[in-house]
Image 1 (spheres, helix red, strand yellow):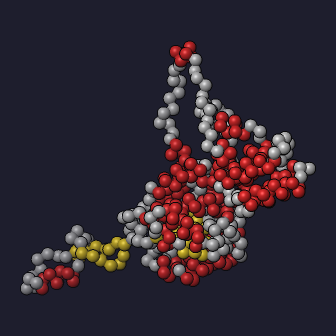
Image 2 (cartoon, rainbow, N blue to C red):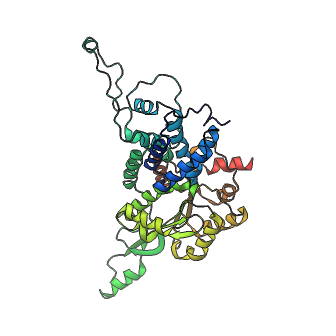
Image 3 (tube, rainbow, N blue to C red):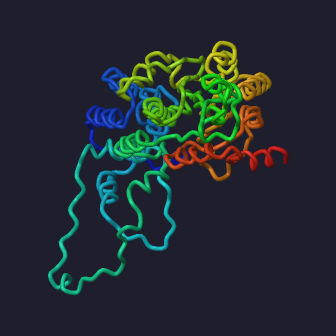
Length: 421
């Protein structure tokens, strides 16, 4: 029997309707789309299924409240805290108090556990720490000075987007809005007048000499012109990428609206089961309005994934328009594709030949034991220049280093060696 509903102690309070209503409110505050209709359906379903089986109770509520794959983990954590642990409020509020950690091993927080706990707490304040006796105050001294050792921003930069609480997500979005992507200008084959240039300009020299009766008084010089490349972003918005895509799109919105950053143009596309151009929406100054308009246009948000078909549509309809003059392409996806790998490999090769540089950001790289075992990842990996993670603020900050260093390949070399073995 799974550990989730083993030894499940259901509440003895006969007011099951009130308990289910409070449980639905917690799910809604945690971020799930739960309305009154689903609450009534859950009450009727539990009344019909009964309590003869602990597993049936869990899966009955699961069938009534969970409609999206990304909500399964959130439902799992909320159910565990609400129905299994009778002291969940006291336990979660105790975690809010300051504590001194010893040398014991710490367990990493599970995905969605923080949001579930905050929804159940419902804004309750942590209990005040017990007052210290006066005799203890006389002997008090600072044994360890932990000031300036670590800041909240430093911890937030390395925290996984999936494990962030609601307040941490808001703070992370503000940090992403201040980030910038530096870019190096490209040298062209055209020249411009430059008094300190290293090249001799015979045309301008003779033209100036014609004004002085053919006498050459100074040699005109020139230097190569520079121009700024374009940035093209292809962002996966399927169910498995939903939480990461929102954070990345906040960052792309900041890049699109940054003044004097250097990018010539920023083009953004989302894809799941079809390709959607959201470039004009990201030009809106308000990020919430921009993402709301982009989500309304992208009808495949949090749906399936067809990377090969969407890349084929991009290469056919958009590559010549947006990839001219050495554009840099960012593709954000986990590489889990439903289409045949042969078609995906062919479209990735074509995309690589059209772009100046192709950078792949994959949130699955947050796992230490990640290996390119999926067919989609095997098909995409050989055709990218850089392969990096995109699960935290620190990983997105590392993208700036990848853009400034043309030889940076991220984790590609290591994974290609593992793929060859």
